[in-house]
Image 1 (cartoon, protein in one colour):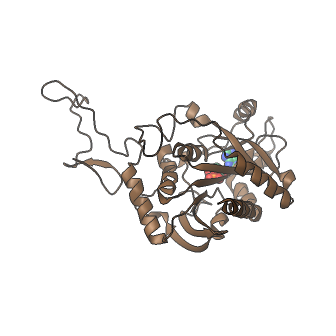
Image 2: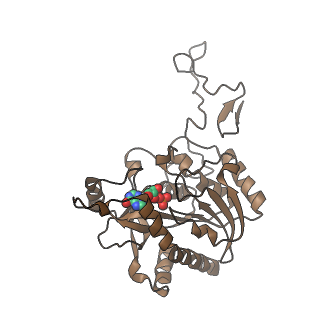
Image 3: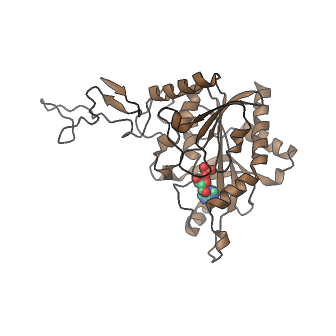
Length: 329
Ligand SMILES: O=P(O)(O)O[C@@H]1C[C@H](O)[C@@H](CO)O1
């Protein structure tokens, strides 16, 4: 019999997670081999039932089903502070949830209302460089889906590679280059559960055009149209910031902003048919020429300081876009 233990692992009834024989083939006495059973952890994946349990835990305690899910980027946790009637769940108190380890990511899930919409926001996301497999990094997106979320708003802090971008600008993502995917890594690796989505999801048109256009219009009414761009984001594994040669290569590939997150969340959201809106707050300009200037080196303190300075504009953009979604529903 197969079940799940409290860590979300698939466990066999004798508690033995690895039932392969000494050859590692799991062969039986008549020479036929059965597939080896792996734990969910070994597969870097969470079974549907475990995700459902987490979603039920949240919905039951929050008393509402959120329609919009927000992921707060580095230093952008205040996006969750504007939620009304908030119920706050610390990640460590949510069964089977990972914990945040990065400064600027508080590790709280906030459920409540914003502009009349039921929302849930992650104040703290999970990054590949924290040691979590991508499926674990983006597992909360599936939790959002099973809570009832239809729209994912993903935000991040990023370095501007496009020379026209300035610190404090907002880049609305209209596409991405999945560098971790180029290296053979995906949050969808492992067996596919069709209850979430298809084995081979298409990713063209991943970023909802209508929401991008609405955000551009909102930017105009906020008087920040010259600080709003539409562009391509790329996620590298981190935690190192990029070398000049890497930045040059990314620019040649058409990348406008670089970070260490979001792409795997978007892939997971599109796999389960969520509408996606995502933006990067440009927290630093990436140098693409060699220089000795120390002030051109990215650092996390600067990233968070810029995010803090621009949180008001980011909050307004998000609230007003949610307001637009509400008008249409
Ligand atoms: O979570 P995000 O992508 O906003 O965080 C960025 C990428 C790294 O985690 C960190 C580097 O300063 O900020």
